[in-house]
Length: 414
Image 1 (tube, helix red, strand yellow):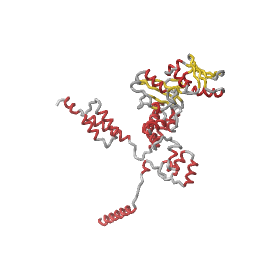
Image 2 (tube, one colour):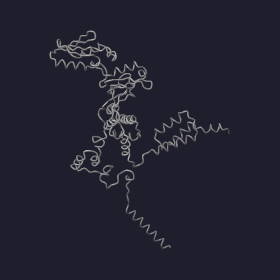
Image 3 (tube, one colour):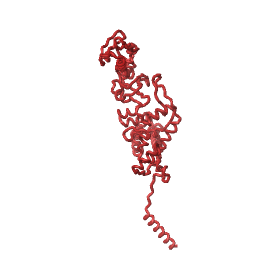
Image 4 (cartoon, helix red, strand yellow):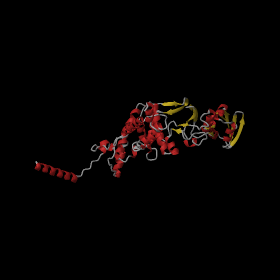
């Protein structure tokens, strides 16, 4: 038999690989099995049967070695693994997307925002992806940006003045800004008609004379209302910048309004993101919020050049979202809702927790780590401390009796 024929027979067929992978169904999770099929079956690799067996054996070994041992203190390990690198983080706020007006909080302040589950981020940012029709054309991307960016009269005028002789408000339009925002003077006139008064247009100046106003204080209040009149866009989105990434145009928005942005024509709702965790939970659900927490923490750590195993971050995200709501890691959230009185007291406001527990006659069952460390007389329920040994006195006495009887019989036999 030729060497070429032997080699041909050794090449593993797709059927052989699939059967070998099926044999591991009880040893590997479905996600790994699917990935193995994709890598080994669907690829163009011409692997021998021996190579397939070696690969699968290596995968199983790596997976089993990565599993958490029963009783391992995963919470403590995760806290240490995230907390120690966090001490190397910076406290700065960074410019974003090369635009002077755009700042985004990163580093330690952003990490604190995430784990504290702040209701609103200090610098809310949205990354808006576009559909196939709009993502490759800058002009079309600009059209979507103009739909999204919240624009008021104040954004498209050069100046505003009060005419005390006629008690009117004079608005000088900025033609460049109008063109940039995709607006015309007629749009401003229509917006002014929402207020009671007379509107006149003379070249680039619009005069608005409110009805029944003869008081300067009232005129100033109406001027403020005029400047705040909405012309177009989505509330909460202050500014939108177009960027090109991986041969497609994306929009980066200062501010956040996920529900409204997802309904805009031209937006790809499957990829559009915001850094507001609570908004994600309200719009897309708690599972999406869990993923967002993980992604935001990973992004902060990677930006700082820190490497933390994703399983520690997954544990934090799981704990924060386990109840179906986003909770902070703190006394108003996870730590403050522990069943153990001593564990709560060990974290913050010690006296308050102890007094409340005494008044209510609460009982601590000493099931956690912190409370057993405080008491000091019990084994901490982690590792070998998790094992409870039960002993039957009767069975022990019975075994000792049999042992003594056997020894006696052996002596007599001698």
